[in-house]
Image (cartoon, rainbow, N blue to C red; front, top):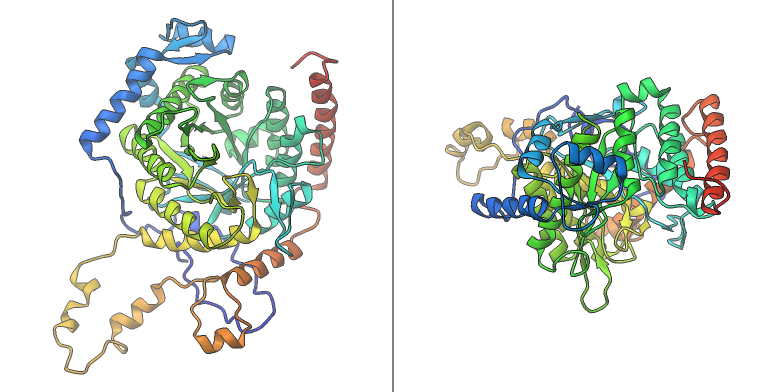
Length: 523
């Protein structure tokens, strides 16, 4: 089967919702090597060397702030040097180099259904898409109304994502209507129960980490099954500039115990928690990522770490954080080039998303530019499918549109062949006056390899008017609603797994709410 969306487009004249998109693993399988991947970047070898040196200077001569006692002790024993402030540790170049040399350069992110397994990096040098994470708002696909994210919305996100053949894995949002301190546990449980794809976990409190990993183990079929086939991976974040909270350090340790890959995530904001220029923003982000890589090497040796610089730039007029501004996109390209080409790490960043609140023309323009830019820069994972308003809102309709965009960019990265067979040069040299290539064997064979969209429109004016001017947005909405309507109501886990997760969530609610009420000690 093809490695991207190449099936013929469906007729769109009727009002009936189209069939659900193929929920296959084609978009992230390794069965078909599609040739070299096109690349673009701002960094030549000299500029790369300059920025890499500054990253290492920052870690070796200034260092990072570590508040986790166990981690601090272990890092000092491994060669870190006490800085001028309590808790600040300098990481010598040799220490960072050792971590980079031993950190795995590839890993598996598996689905609970093994047809959704992914290899990072992909064997065809392509990319993997994932949905947006942490969003607290939801745009209902039925009427485009906005509401706070809730568990019903989370289940609908899972239902739609299950049908998106370009999306490899799913991240859980922030849900309302449950205790705030356990919102991550409720959301992760809901997504895990309703998707067979890989699920990305984001802990919100240090007390929650163990509960989340236990839920992941239940959904995977046990701790040994999770270790053998990691069907979840976890975000661990820096606290810019150059600090690491206790919780995120604990994530590295806990994930090491379970063999769960971590995404070392830096989220600096240009002009706020990082200097204003794109290059300075990239240096800050990459230094924080390398700090986490070094911590993982010491605290959880052999743990797969995926470098995840998520870049923001402040709007200097309003103070709002932006993920799709020109400056943020430039910084993302620089950071991905550095972590991927410069330091040899697996690379993950936003590859979709917009700073506008709606799935509108601006949204499509911003995310198209962003996706193409970071894909060309070499990112292995492109996050943000479905997210709007600078990663705070999720739209299922936008997610369907992003899936279509992902298939186009995936195809765009394929470097065209230029040999005589690809050029059909012999026939070109013999074409008669007034001739054509419609009946050429070259055309007949190659036409089936053209990219064919499922959502984007290619109809003429007459068909467009006859169909009530239904555009790509309308087709995407129909597909999202059809996915929601036809999703299995009870989810994809067994009754026993569902009951075990529900019981664990109840225990977590009682325990963690009491922790934050000061009634019991932390775990």
